[in-house]
Image (cartoon, rainbow, N blue to C red; front, side, top):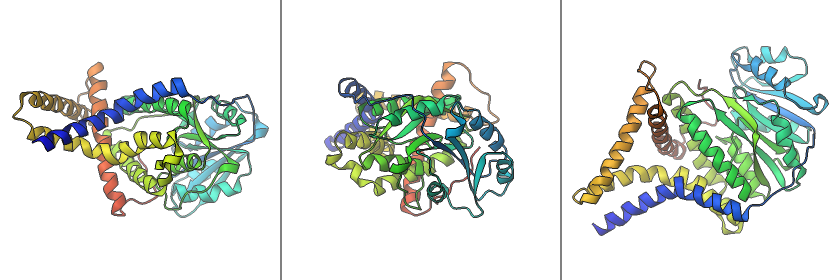
Length: 378
C-alpha cells in the first residue's frame, strides 16, 4: 500500500507540475532572468508562404487577406504552396496577379512540400501560414521587427481560435509562449503563423509529421532564439466538434513523439535553461502526463478504503463527469448549455480529449500508423 500511495502522489505531483507548477516557475524566472532582445521597425524582404490542400472554399479570402497586409508591396511576395489538391484551389490562386503558385500534383505532405518550396525563395524572411488562418493587418511588421536582433532565427505569431474550449487552450498556450520567449525561446511555433530567417533554415526530415514544430525547435537546437510576437495574429474558426479536433490532435501528438525522437539534443544539459523548458513544456506534456492521468485514477480506486482518498476520488469523478457533460453537450444535435458552465465543461472535455489523443498518437507513431500527410478537418 505504501508503494501505491507513493506512485499516486508522484502521478498527481507530475500532473500538477506540468499544468500549474511549470507556468508559475517560468513566469517567475522570466521576470528575474528574462533575456531582452533587440527590436527595430525594419522591413526586410518577405515571402509569405500559404500552405494549401483542398482549400477552394477559403483560398480566395486568404489571398485577399494577404494582399491587404500592411507591408511595403515591393518587399513582399506571396506564394501558395499547394499540395496535391483535387479541387479548384490551384485555379483560384493562379487567377491572382502577383501570386506565385507552387503546385504539386501528387500529395507529398506538408513537410516535404515545404522542403521543395523554400529553396525557390530568396527573400530574407520567410513567413509561413495556413490557408484557413486570417492575419491581422499589422502582423508582418510586428514579426519582422524581431529580426533586427542577429540572434533571432525565428518568430512565432499569436494563434487565436474564436471561441470554445479550444480557444481557452490557445490562450493558455499563448501565455506560456510569452513567458518561454522572455526566458529564452518559445517551445515550438504553430503553423498558422510563424517566420524564419532564410539563412538559418534547415529542412526537417521528409517524414516529419508536424513540420512547424520541427523547423522552429530545430533552430533552437542549433543555438538560435525563437521568440514570440503577440501582435502578429492569425485567427481561425473553432472546429465544429471535439471529434474534429480529435483527428488533428492525434496527428499532432504522434508528431510530438516523433519530434522528441528526432531532437534528443534538446534534452541534453548543455542546452541549459532550454532543456528544462523543453522537458517541462513538451516532453512531460506529450510523453508522460497523458499516461499519468488514468494511472492516478486507478491508483485512487485502490486507495478507496481511506477516507481522504475517497474525497480525492470524488473530486476526480466530478472533474471527469463535468468533462463528459461538456462532450455530450458539444454534439451537433445536443441542447447547448449557457453561461460559465458551458466554458468550464467544454474546457475540461477538451483537456481530457487532448490527453487521450496524446496516448493514441503515441501508439500511432510507434506502430507506424500515422502518415506525414494530414487529413483535412473542418
